[in-house]
Image 1 (cartoon, rainbow, N blue to C red):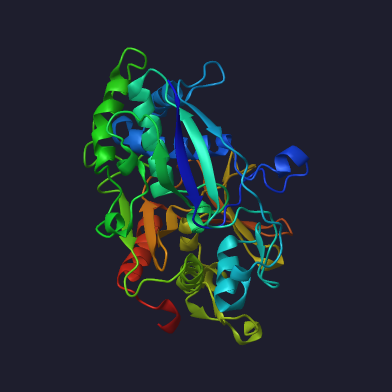
Image 2: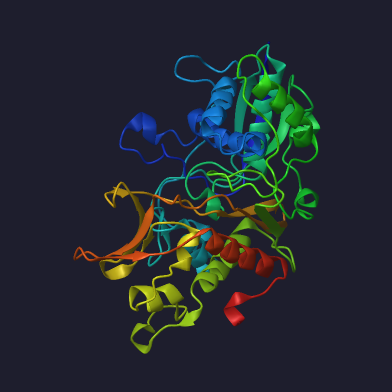
Length: 410
């Protein structure tokens, strides 16, 4: 089978793991097929989980059959045609001004310096074209599912660091060559705003819905022999992100559209700060701009409250003065990490951008994991954060987003 050419475009700055590494070969790897496959696997699991549920062993069996393992390669091959250029750390135009400050806030401490409003790692600029090729092989069913995973990655996700905060966006802009299953050159392209406007949850639609029969056939077929059926409405949530009509939530920003991704992410960063920090800062901390603090900083870190609802938006949370809140396993000796269940994705293009927000309401923390506030001095205190906090926080954020409520003025 011949190679199919797929033209991509970077929609928001992409910070891939290889960029900035000390090794020269790794430092030049601003876009890596292995990273793309990793992102595709995430979205494949979210789709396959509809029928496989919490049976993670069965999920691994089907995933390995589609994407391959170290023992046997996937029949679908991907390759990159030419490494895109990367931009060195510094202060790009989009880091300047008030919007730039809030974009750096979304980047976080690992990628940006909020005091200087600079970027601290190399990245691929928004608007950069990237060309990949796919050799789909002879198994049309597997090729269909790999293409579905690529479509999901570009429609809802992204690549590299801080994808959940709006970075690393990709869109499929053109396809030339053979495809598989329900996919055509038109349907494989990343959809426009009309697709996102009615979304209220994450559930297969259009060509993705047509892929579900293929997914079931692969899962239950001779090679996998995995049970595949929809979970009961009252079944407990899965331990990983899964598409669901009842355990996902989605919404598009209301009000006027934004004229650029920069303006959109600037607005998003400001909104997120005021969503997280809703209390006026004490007089001794008024030097901060805006002069607001999170309730948890005041009531938990510097108070006696044990309920750390902010943790529902991701752990760890690192504070100044040596305070940190994180999840721990193995009797408190294993430091864990919980990625935010809330995703912030700029969608659209040209001068017509909106923010897509969605959340997976899967199990946030197993019963065996404990959350603790720890200090540099070695002191610690047990805290609580649960699935209810995830549902409450993400629902309030997405509702405010749809209704175009300016949190900085409330």
